[in-house]
Amino acid sequence: MGKAAIIGWREIIIPNLPDLARWPFDGSLAELTKPGAPVVAEAYPGDVYSQLGIPRRPVWSKRQQAGRRFAGAHLMLWLANRPHIDGAALEATITNGFGIDKTGEDRFDAVVGLLGMIGVVERRCTEGAPDDDDVATWEGWILGQLP
Image (cartoon, rainbow, N blue to C red; front, side, top):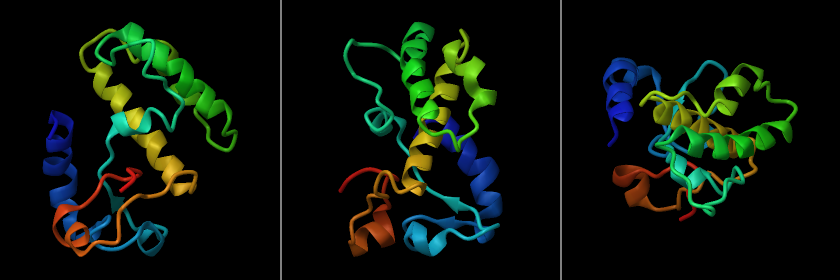
């Protein structure tokens, strides 16, 4: 588990656990999504690259601003193809490669994960969880990952 995930669990999820729906433990997205009812799901940005049109070749690194800038061109195209999503507040950050500092990688992952979640909510991608009691009870799943 990454540093950002640990902070998210400690500062957001655990204090609000009674008010959150946990996908896939508490049901499918269709069952859980209601106005004013937050749903928590695990996302893995690396799984989302292909959904957003980010190629693996040429080789690039999300740890370097130049790599994030390369991937950012694909994020901008993804947003441009969805005029119903207002990504204007993100444009400068994306085209800048999420900054030169070490936390640029975290910002990049957050945006990639968010866009992947949007793709699932819009039903452009499947939510992915297999119909399996162990997944729903113990293991969980990564949102958008195919079984």
